[in-house]
Length: 116
View 1 (cartoon, rainbow, N blue to C red):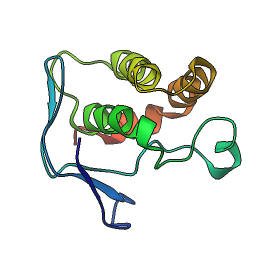
View 2 (view 1 turned 30 degrees about the vertical axis):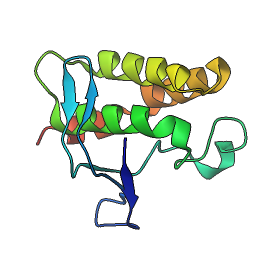
View 3 (view 1 turned 90 degrees about the horizontal axis):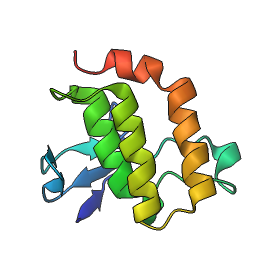
């Protein structure tokens, strides 16, 4: 996955895909931008910082689903995929679980804002 770091835009995104990201049937197009995993600074030491390379694939997939609401995807499925990909890409199970519960507990407003 090739990613450009371009700084903040109007949505707070700092990373942009330079090539399509494919995970199963899910395809995130080249040019899609993300802020990385939105982990509050106070938790960076125990979870991971937003730009952690091991968390970027999960962040792009999760942000894409939250913003576009592709057919067949629920918020719970997006959050489950986020945790699974974090672990697959080398984030510890504990950190992945903390990130998962962060999006489960606090991601509802981002989910509701997506798809519009």
